[in-house]
Image (cartoon, rainbow, N blue to C red; front, side):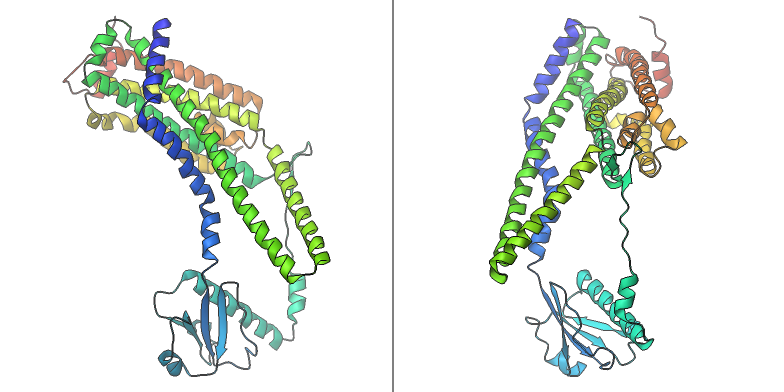
Length: 441
């Protein structure tokens, strides 16, 4: 046991002190935070872009008023002809020319947008929506139906969901938490499992393993390497969570404060002080209500259970697959030769990721149950199901089978490892591997 601890310590300290570990530990949260905050930053800069479009409308009886404009898109009617509009077109002033021919109402597809460059999809989609609304409005008026009547009929329904115990829940939040956990385990098993395989190949190629084997048993070396890299993975993952949270919280707070300051300035300039105080109070109440709703939904997910299951399934899945990756590394002399053995090992893991997408829509199906029980697929699939709520007996059964699967896989991998780790220059196939399983000491 002491020898395994020494190997774990060596593997852990060697990898944690590497520059690549330090760089990725810092760079990882920055990349994840940038993915989270990119939409906010992009939307902030996007608002500065405006589009002014000249409208030549041949349907004055239908469109009697200026067409509606959005915050960034302005539609301006003009009475000149299309040829004259093209000749006098100023690209610095206008983005394009919208031409609505006289048969536009009967043939909506006859509208044309002329632009100097390739048309922006945001602009085209907005114009299509405006044209659709205006045509429908004209048809309603022709039939004697008021727009107000139609608007009063439209009803938005926001369905709230509660458990029988009375806790409010949110399907979108639950799906996001479950799928994020499944993807994280999928990625980490691949990332650190391959590191085990590469480490074994490197030691075998450099003949370092011959010296190590003289002091420890092959099984001790394999277990020490697997557990050491597992601790490296957990360390890096915990650092990523903490740093990502700190970076995201800081930037989000800054952006929210900036928006609130801009809103307060606008309110102070455009309204009286009393009205401003009332509106500010209403805004705070809305923000408080929204925060309470979010917190209520967050409480519906058992995060301690989710995090505990994440650690268990990460370690169980990693140990199971790392034993197989270590066996592959011991059986070959270089990384190129690993391809023939990698496919059977990675197929269950890839399949579990594919099945996870179906599990999200129906977490209680037979497919979801069996794939969350089988050890080769349970780390990803059960992690997706946990957020939705899983019966305790299924969770216990899944973890128990995962532990048994790890023990059995490690036993098989150790028999391949002990033979292959000192074998050089021989092309190994599946028939040869099957013989190694039954070699006697």
